[in-house]
Length: 453
Image (cartoon, rainbow, N blue to C red; front, side, top):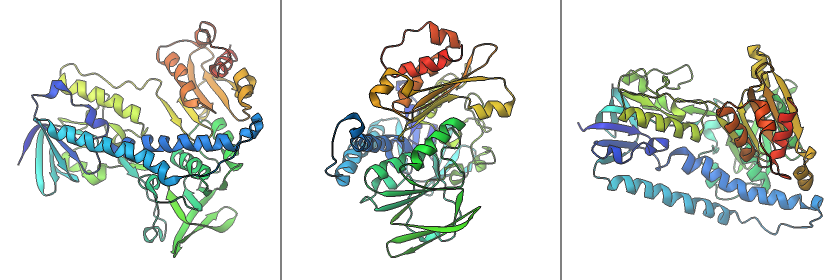
């Protein structure tokens, strides 16, 4: 029974823990898939590498409003896909080879399950360790829809490696994966239908963002909102999804089906409870502020324990775990203050802090201010008609409680707000004490902040 000083399960952000400080530790790394985890292989990196050319296609399609008459000659999907994975796949391979070359690291390729505290069975071999880090991530949720298990559907794990662009694509779900993949495949020529139980897309976002985003997508896609999938069947290459809603039933057909209805942590597949590791009612591993689980000597990080499901959050947690492994008597806590997120759809969405509906639900006093891109000089330059910035503040202290941006470069624009919130700047300081470049898009944030004064 091999025994180690440290065992790390998962090679996404968990793989970033090791450094020279661990050279005298005997380390086991367990990975069942490609090195690099979800983000590198089937998540944020490949999706953004597909979004970028999709953005170019959309820019060409709408260039006439700027007086530029342009046409699109061809979408070369095999070339687009190769550009993505010819870069990503070698990185994953190199990452594994690098770890295998380390004298103090043993890599175990396979699925693991706990059989006792700090004891993991991998391919009929039991590994034990003094310390264990669970960084095993999450996987797509597959709903119990009749017939779905008999249909060749896709999830975010597979859709980006699809062999050819489908003529018709149906997407189940209205969250960030749905929004991004709808943009990609619509831009590349698919006729896209989105089926969503809610009456808006991106329901978790601020209500003004989700409303405007839904309006934008209604103008380019077939939205089947307030509907749920009752059954799925496949006849040769055609997939039919039977839908039900408040106004009755209908059906939608497609050549490909993408299930994008959320993600679930992989704690159940690891059987973590056998290691005295507790989980919540959704399967997320319970951790304290130092990322320690309920089992002595076991830590967790990333999507397996955090429903935010963000790579930058997992990276933060990996730094915390790394410090606490090396400094058990001086443990630090994870600080999630002003954690942003972004959705790389078209339009982009970015957010930090509370939504307005969250503040109402908590009964917290707040004031809001919104400014459209169209009210700024650079917004005029782009002829933008959908983008806006919404900021929310505490009326008493002047503290910024949240910011929500929809439109071009939203994922970049949000960062100035993140820094202001993280370092405790008041709305007045952010609006009055900072010089904003003119004419540039950050002015939409400036003007929204000024609206709070």
